[in-house]
Length: 256
Length: 247
Ligand SMILES: Nc1ncnc2c1ncn2[C@@H]1O[C@H](COP(=O)(O)OP(=O)(O)OP(=O)(O)O)[C@@H](O)[C@H]1O
Ligand SMILES: [Mg+2]
Image (cartoon, rainbow over all chains, first blue to last red; front, side, top):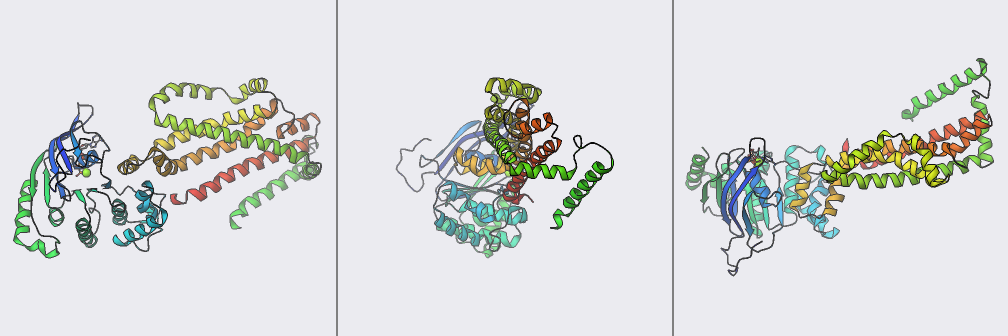
């Protein structure tokens, strides 16, 4: 990782992405998923990524999480060292042999946190995602939405510096989804977190983010990079303000 | 109790049929002994200590053979599952080795390793090796890639991935292989003992054969069946304990 000579200032990017491209090998030469993506993420920024299906959103998150290398281009983390990452995958990705509690606790086990504080932390997270009473359930006994809440709790439990969220709320019912928006928003404000979140929902991105990136049809290029300044904490009513309406219209235009 | 009713009934029916056959068919006792004479022979072999002694020897060979065979199969299977190039190099040999029946090389092994317990342990390990190896490979290959992604996103170590993902995820298939291996291990030990041995159930079986002590042969065979069932049962217990999450 390349370090930055500049002393740490609020606007030093925590993540710089330069000319990132991703090509998957296939029979007819290669499938271009991402092309020439460049952007900087400031510390504590909440970035939403929107784009049509197949535009490489998941691929972008997987590259940033270090799960696959980019075909060309590079990304560097501002502090020089890799941040700790909390990731929510598009599918819940639970371990079927672990109970809800044990699944949520996994990152603390990996980080070798002592059993007592791990248990306390796990109980907090179970409460946060509203899964009390299901502590000892196995994933096979959970609904899709409940499984996804377990995955969200697991991504947050070790207090990561960078949250990579791939449509985390897609399978939740409207009520739970909006409660999770508020919770995520509070959490993000209370702690020093940087969030990159993929979503298909314009409402969701405007309710949560400071900035929205819109990708084009495959290969994904940045079509629009929009920063906006809606005051935090955001309440439900914000959706009926004229500023929200204008931003929503602009985004809808960019997405086609 | 209800669970065992069918097995108890079928056993009783079997014993009854067997008894009637020996009573009314006129087959001499040294060809088909009656259940009662087998039972008497069993009690005698228990009392003079010969049956416990020989059973202990065979059981030792089986357990050691299982431990050695399963350990090697698991380690080699894991390496093969992880490395396509290693698999390309080794798999022709492994498949070829399966074309040779263990019975054919058992005499060789006894010549090389002596007629003691060692040759039996090795034969037993060889016969256990393949099913456990194959199932280890299949089990490890079937671990969902999404779980690797999850662990890698947490910067988990190789050891953590092994113990927290690969081992539990492949356990169902692995235990399936162990179940086959456990049953085969009994065959392995007996094949070795039948080639040449001074002790063990295979030795007892052959002794009974030479002396026209057919009830003794039956006692040895039933003891072997009991050993195989016991090993099978142990694996089933492990499956019930560790695979509760499956259904
Ligand atoms: N491992 C892979 N091997 C080959 N092709 C892949 C791989 N991963 C993704 N792709 C391809 O890359 C393109 C982008 O995929 P990606 O999953 O990033 O899209 P996405 O924007 O997340 O879509 P969605 O909104 O449907 O989740 C797709 O055409 C997909 O088929
Ligand atoms: Mg996706």
